[in-house]
Length: 111
Length: 115
Image (cartoon, rainbow over the protein chains, first blue to last red):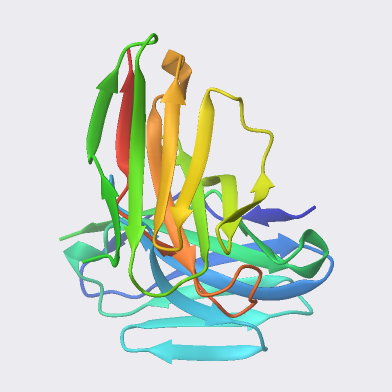
């Protein structure tokens, strides 16, 4: 089994930078995904990390440290439309490579 | 727009009704999933189909009955539901089940209310 922990809620200001952390405990780590989900809508895929380091995609970056069981999603130049839930999800090969979601972090961007 | 299409978007049903949720994808994905999501909670896996065969049933009550008529379609038949079954039901697909670097592609979900 695995524990995936994220902060429940965060608030940030438009134009700022915010970092959303995710820690996990798993045996047989096989990749970590970040999803964005606006209220009442589908989760949409943001990023995938399987090796240590930073993956950058425009305003969004995701970092992984496998030895620390830690990832973060970095959002730059925040926009109001970035207000959403951000879900961290981990694949564990001892669980048949199933994807398990963390509880999600609700981000509110204020003017 | 999502490439996984779910219908209907909203559904209200009584506890004695029978209804079906539908999901369709034309990306050639061979794995399809049903998730249930309650408010402010993460999606919870219900069923997985791989190559049109049921691969995983996460101990879901029999009042939920999945069906995969072909590689593009996934249905969820509902019968004798309870009010606590009210939730957002999400369909997802991926190229191949258990492929490690494949993200799930989600539909926009069906908002189900059981009265």
